[in-house]
Amino acid sequence: MIVEPAADGARAGVAPKARQARRLEIRLAGTGGQGQILAAIILADAAALYDGFNVVQTQDYGPESRGGASKAEVIITDGEVDYPKVTRPDALLAMSQQAFTRYAPAVREDGLILADTTWVKDASAAPTGVRLVGIPLTAIARDEVGKALVANVVALGALAALTGAVSREALERAVLARVPKGTEELNRRALEAGYLAAGAARESGGERRDAARL
Amino acid sequence: MIVEPAADGARAGVAPKARQARRLEIRLAGTGGQGQILAAIILADAAALYDGFNVVQTQDYGPESRGGASKAEVIITDGEVDYPKVTRPDALLAMSQQAFTRYAPAVREDGLILADTTWVKDASAAPTGVRLVGIPLTAIARDEVGKALVANVVALGALAALTGAVSREALERAVLARVPKGTEELNRRALEAGYLAAGAARESGGERRDAARL
View: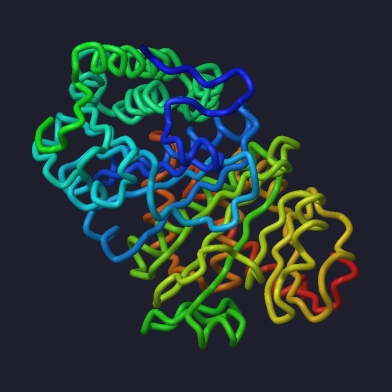
């Protein structure tokens, strides 16, 4: 079952703590060129402009950014964003092994990790108890949608389906407003593929609570 | 005279306080659709990936974002970014009257405001003593470069020329890496137009220290 956002705008499908506090921290990480920053901006647009939340979206370029690592963050809240840095993410998208190994340990125990199993093979860095979902996002983008470049949009669809962080309507509007002209249909299919893959991953037991394997 | 970044990577042309602390806060503001977020990401890429600084780049979507206001921020430092929010910008790019009126008062007294005089007509909100530069960025993009859409890249060129926040080489690389395929030459010309306009604005006395008019 895909958890839909509640009608009152509260997010469902996320950790109880985040739901109470109405503050949801999402980190998107991978290597440069995978489009995490664009994905984060789209997610932020969806949450802020179309779903009506307050949002802070951040790129933090430390020394690791020169090594090809890429990380973007989104904080979604219906209150004030008092502290704008993500410290204990409720959800992590990891699109490379390096990103998984580096950022998985910081995810809340009741949080979600969505791993792109095209690249992530070793999930041993995931904390015990975390909700770990492996989907071959890049392979789906390449083989089913037709372009590996849209893996970030496949990821957004899956992430939204699994967390309920934003509504599907808001996400689709945000995707279509940000992607290059002429690629709307491709990106719409990518988003759809992400939602479908999340549903299939859950139905097939791809969502594991033992974090040692994907 | 356009102040070039010093060879050791220290930024010149900025407020002495920022130079000592090696922390430069830049805010880019306007209305939605003017590309402030992309401009901020390009500036962040230039500073982090090509000039080697540590950078945090942020979009803060408050309620005003639903009213069409758009704001993006970049903090450039050679140290740690301890507090990731911009509070007293060293430099403000204001591409709408609303953005100018709203954000000019927070600029440091020894800071810079670059106003797009295509849209900003009333500069009375600028603090006394601030370095105020008016350039018709959008008109230049539309009439000289040939496309109003690249006003954000014209703005980046002017901002970099006026602040020395990033090197020209880094900025050009960052622009070319982020803009859509096929628009590289257009954006290169937009960047050049921004540098030229900044030089002309300064030579013609367009840089005023009395903030009441542009």
